[in-house]
Length: 241
Image 1 (cartoon, rainbow, N blue to C red):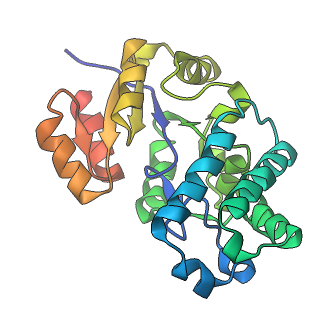
Image 2: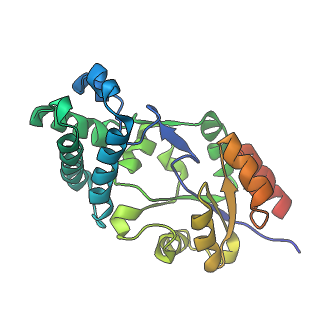
């Protein structure tokens, strides 16, 4: 049976981009404000705990509508982080600088090379959307990279008040694109998010750029289609039609 796909919804992190430092909350200029030698000397479990406790705080802030609110909440995030790691001796000024770097440095993420090549091409045939568990500054990250113009819908969880796999995340994109679920393909690196899309009738595709995870999903998650990059996603699209 021929399937007509007219739109593609993309997750952002680990699908289209990744943090340039390798860590979502270690900002590009983090070590301009944090003594790197002190940081590296700390127990890794203590660092993990500090990020975890700070993450608990930010995960409870369901609605963050704009960058000003994002700044305010992430300042508290880094205050919690700092309080758990007193040996860093971070001042309020340093915490403000780290927070500013997180929110307003729109080069904090790097886009995969195939995104610049293939997203413009895909946009000629399909309506595109971003559906991401993220914060408001993500929009400007895409604008900075000159990619925002290719997406007709841009759904950010903190502005909606729920996160994937909540059905509202997908339904808002469908409404903004004026598409029915049967016309749409959803691409995410998280299997649970793909299951959430499938529950409302959207076909899904797991994209894993991590080779080990890709191999795991490919051979162990046999009920999901899995690709390694955007070229694989496009090939999958063509095979569906």
